[in-house]
Image (cartoon, rainbow, N blue to C red):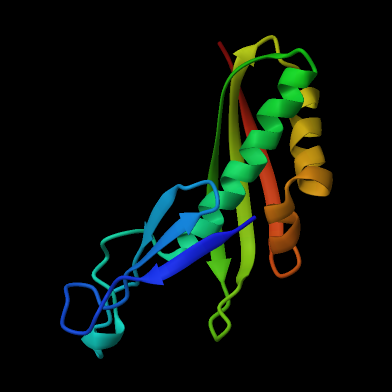
Length: 149
């Protein structure tokens, strides 16, 4: 897996901390830093997601992908899946994630709660590389709501 990240901001521009990432599959993601009132030249302009937000979003995408796939492979009639992630970070550098809660909402027809619980557990224990990696620094908790469609 490859990715190239290029600084797009320059001193004196609207965002001196803008970056663009091009993935190995040719997709482009913009990133920006938070504005810094004390040192504007060191801050961004809030024009795109922060890199750590993208890390959290990627983890959510990774685990939601797993949950849907595991439920589909179990022949469950899954019709929707979302995950709301909330996190806390360390107060000092490096400001790693210390707590992450993932609240899943799975929509489907006749899906047993035990199947959703199992799919989430399998994702976090075996399949989701992102959450397993982040679990080295963060306490990861999960919950879910099951909506009958």
